[in-house]
Image 1 (cartoon, helix red, strand yellow):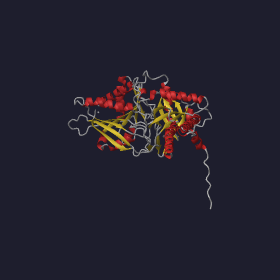
Image 2 (cartoon, rainbow, N blue to C red; image 1 turned 60 degrees about the vertical axis):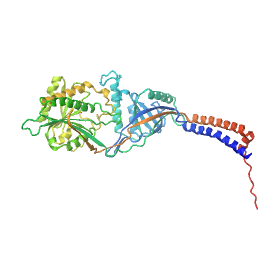
Image 3 (cartoon, rainbow, N blue to C red; image 1 turned 90 degrees about the vertical axis):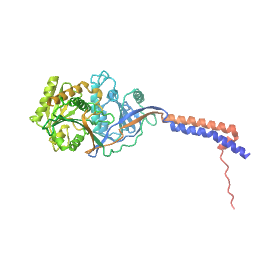
Image 4 (cartoon, rainbow, N blue to C red; image 1 turned 120 degrees about the vertical axis):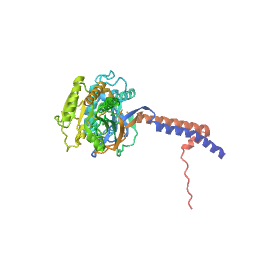
Length: 511
């Protein structure tokens, strides 16, 4: 009899265990069962200048989302604002950042025209795929970038691109916000989650300079031929490292250098067309950081080679000009080499129907700021000039190839004209070079950088607490009824009732 009773008890419990497990599973998944979408996001840069923090100082996100239509009195300390660039109110962002108002995070939605992976429609400024108002959007993004990279922001800031998924989520969030019920743990809504470890300092970052060489034609009596250096810096700096490709600043300069190297490698392969100059090609790193890589490269090359350089031509931002380029120099225009450089370029420019202008700017030795790449040459008493579409030197960390510097805004015709102008000017002065080598150096200076530049953003649609409580109430009632039926069917109604009766107290006998 006792064995039979124990068997019935085991049967009841075996029937109940799966139900209990189902209950715990439903509770655990109540907030995670409605994943809306997963998108790639790019974090705002985090860096220090001489120990002073700038950029976004956090990376992890786990907050509800809101749009710019949130109620005026909302507490946004645990809310991520989703802001499309098309709807950006720059004054609002400036106010929130400058006054350090509490915010859970920012997510900026960028138009696809700024996506460097979007290769459709060609690469020119006049490409058909560029929408109306693209130049205005570019100006807005440029202003936003400059605001963000010069601010110390104590919460995560991310960028992503518009697509059908993010637009659908944003439209739903706007509808909720319009009702005056922003997303919270109580009301439900959308939750944005980025699960990453907190950023760490990048210890001893390296910079890489690439050098190529085309030897000139020696004749009897030549000990060492003079050298012309053609140099371009290829590094970028922008609001988001993962999106800053620098198509114009200075991708256009790097592309022009490689094409010039290719053209001259053909000429120099034939002794009859080989010039009486050695050609030194350098792709340098660290351009946005006072041309740190150029400085290290110049100090590391053989002194005899450096002293053989007649002059250096530095290429900077040559992909968006129409009819005029500028030659920037540190030595006075009366200098014989400067005159020779300017006259050579002017003559070729006239034949091509374009203009070149000359800009002279003295170097301030006491100022650590290096505005142009040729200034690193000038500090070592090497004659040099920078060819650029810019008429004046940008400020520190400006025009350094940020998000706004997309390939869709580079004019391929401008790059071709730049190559032709520079190549023919060098000829007039007399994977395609010999002795290619790479120089790796430890980056030093006043900049400190941090990792965690790209992540996955999970967007969840979560129910309100009221819904969760109602769901648990229904499940609980269902389980109680199910348990009661199981007990009655296996042990009888009396056993079910006895489960809820208070057991009789036992009196302790005293001696």
